Length: 424
Ligand SMILES: Cc1cc2nc3c(=O)[nH]c(=O)nc-3n(C[C@H](O)[C@H](O)[C@H](O)COP(=O)(O)OP(=O)(O)OC[C@H]3O[C@@H](n4cnc5c(N)ncnc54)[C@H](O)[C@@H]3O)c2cc1C
Image (tube, rainbow, N blue to C red; front, top):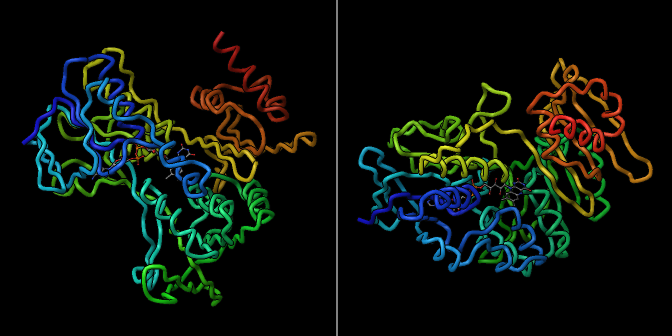
């Protein structure tokens, strides 16, 4: 049995933020990072660029082995865990090994879900969450020209753009009526879909795949998809990007409470003593509360990992987690899209008001959701909004009065003006 004072499971953004916080306070304790991945830590956000070839695999690695040696952090790759025994302070590994911990952080992120589609298990399909997934997709580009992406969420759309950039003929199938349904309103989504179409991507919203069958045999065989309108579609490469769920199956029988993720409080503590969880695996308080959410975005994984790491070493400066606010910035075919907060995607809350604006000179477009005098959320295209400033306006429930009309007309400049008043 091997022992570590601080045992971190996972090697991505939450885990890295935690080890930085631990080492800032405690240089002596043993710190070990166990990860299922066979690579050194990398950012999943860069994987679509590995697929297109715009980024080389070695360029997405965040830290080399020397970095971990200098921090005296032991990192074990290809070391997936299968179980946690909180009473014994033990973690079981896939290879049968056992680690004993003083304090444990679970930062195992999320894993892609696979939809229940007849025949899907019989065909070769790809996912995009790990560097190995991206390398497999990249290798598959050589095997044909036609790619089909299931799901028009963030991962699906990123992948579609990069597959098209790499020269594939790409079709995206999305059962809901618009692309990026969890992030954008229908109008902003339609502008973006038009951009994809102009770049040759065939986007089919409001359509579902009902069956899949192989079109050949052997390694490189493609497949034929049947859509719910009876149409058929041939694919040399099939990417399933229909969503993710917290990767915490290894907690079965551990007694640690889970729902959509591992339940944590504002200090990232789980229901078990000496066990914390952070990042895409954690279901944490969300803003404005009292609800909980699996935030599923990089900045929140970093914030949660830092809080967990500080708590593990008893750092007196540790602040409670303020709750997640959804925020995403993405660039598709030269269009920069930003979405922050709520009230933008899906059904608009009954007590919210929606305002839109555009700048004919720059082509920028924005859509704002307000509740009374306060900002709920904003989505914009080609407007260089500072998402940190917007998050603060939302979090602090800053009344926009008397600048409300100005904010609606010029959100970027007015947001800065409002916050500079507060910070001053
Ligand atoms: C293609 C793509 C694009 C994205 N784009 C954006 C974006 O633009 N903006 C944004 O904010 N977010 C984006 N995200 C989401 C962002 O990457 C995640 O929010 C962030 O990586 C979460 O970090 P994490 O540390 O919680 O977990 P993850 O990054 O999910 O990493 C989990 C870690 O745990 C390890 N692990 C899993 N199971 C086990 C096990 N049983 N035993 C040991 N180790 C295990 C994995 O190997 C990995 O090291 C994107 C994600 C993808 C896939």
